[in-house]
Image 1 (cartoon, rainbow, N blue to C red):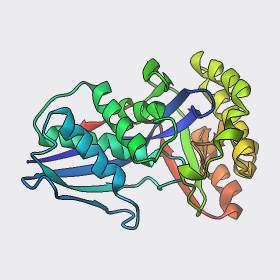
Image 2: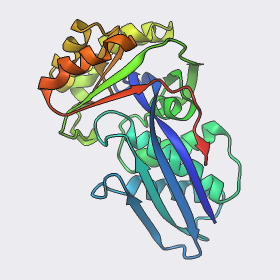
Image 3: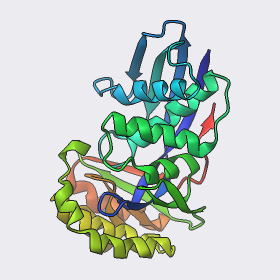
Image 4: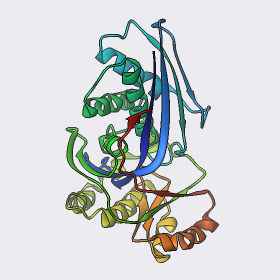
Length: 287
């Protein structure tokens, strides 16, 4: 009994830590998951091909949540393998994407059906249990699973707005070398910014995601102590929007295609990796 699935990356519009309300958008980055169910209920093995040193707790916990949902927690173990082109622990939703891909692959292996939001919710539950998120990252999970632009109430797990992104813009991402783990985030400092984040959330809810990305990034950079140099350089080079994604340290910039090389050049002195990608409007899928 084997299932394979593909889920896509996401970037932050409004980080939900401050208020419990968030927004995110789909990126054409990906994670593939392969889940093989075993007739040994105590045997769970996980492997992350793109970063073998990473902790596999999330993928193992996700499979257990799906099995328990169908009352099969005592029937099967699992072997889980993931591969991805998403840098881990940089704010590019690698955990939410992995949870979506593993959950969908497990449902496929069982030859069962679940509602999309149920699959997302089980992945969010697993992410909370594995302590890879503070809010559950329901916004990130929805953007990864559905694609496009989403606005959510993370506290109540309500999808408030969902739409395709039609604008013909490229997405540039500056990825610093250093990882930044969720447990490093100073939640007290973040919540001190809640009134300003609430204003930015209103912008996002009204569809002004480009301005929201920039303002959210500046606010969270201040709270988390991140340099805004990548953001300012991208805007100076002509980006229509730029800001910290997630809890960082990566920065995303939305730009006309003819200035991608200018943004890349502006970031060249900052070190790290530069990714050139696109919006994603495609839904996660069994493969």
